[in-house]
Structures are given as structure tokens and as C-alpha cells.
Length: 94
Image (cartoon, rainbow, N blue to C red; front, top):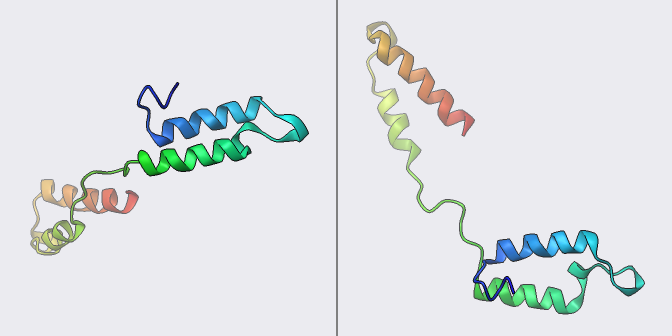
């Protein structure tokens, strides 16, 4: 039903995992590891692959080059003196 509703692989995999934690089949086989379910999930992955996490990225080198070309630290304004380490910290924490 979820596949027919147009859900992607990641949503179907989440549903499989949730059902698998609750439902077990004969001989202690969980639904998620049943051969038909795993085969179905492989087919879904081929037809509706997981989308990339980010659709766009940007070149960090441009920012680093700009920051390195800024005036020497003693000559920077208070605003730029605050923005430079803030941007460097933001890049490091990403």
C-alpha cells in the first residue's frame, strides 16, 4: 500500500523496520529478513532509489581564499574582526 502511494525507498525501509520490530514469523524470523521482503526492498531501491541528502554544495575554498586575503588582523575593523573567526568556526563545525 505504501509503495502504491508513491513513497520512496527510505520511507518504505522505515516502515519495514518498524513492522520487523513488532512482528515475527515462524521460527523466530522477523518480517524484515524474510526473503520475499528483502527481494521486494531490492526492487524498490532499483525503481525508487534514495535521494541524495544535499542537492547543492558550495566551494569552501572560495571562502577560505577570501578570508586569507583580508587585511592583516591589526588593520581589520571590529565587524570584520568578528566575522572572520565566526566564519572559520562555522566551517569547522559543519
